[in-house]
Length: 130
Image (cartoon, rainbow, N blue to C red; front, side, top):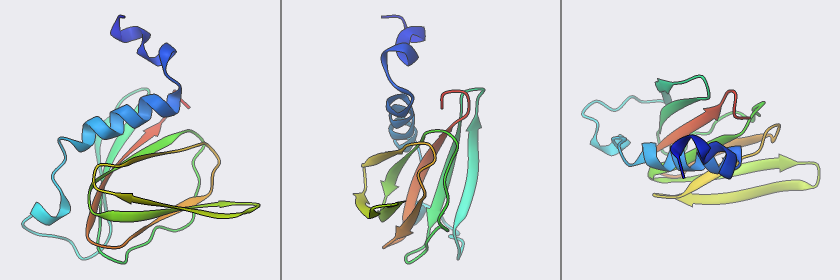
């Protein structure tokens, strides 16, 4: 079908997963940067009316604060290894994600990421898709 039909065929999480994974194929891994910053870095690399794309570099052992989003978010591990913790009333679910893997986080799901090694991730935040 026509590309404009894509959002109707896929749910917002599926579409964000595809955008994150595709963006990950053209993102430079943390290890290849000449000057690696000491802490967690975030760079907005694309913004559209429907979504924003961020590249994040995580030093080993770095953890994001527990947070949630109002819309779907997908993230793709370009290089490295992270654990995503999803906090729910019935407990914490941990997802181990390595190079090439992508996760979709539903709206209003408290979560955080923890890096095990130097890691690069691509995050796609829905704006109007959520």
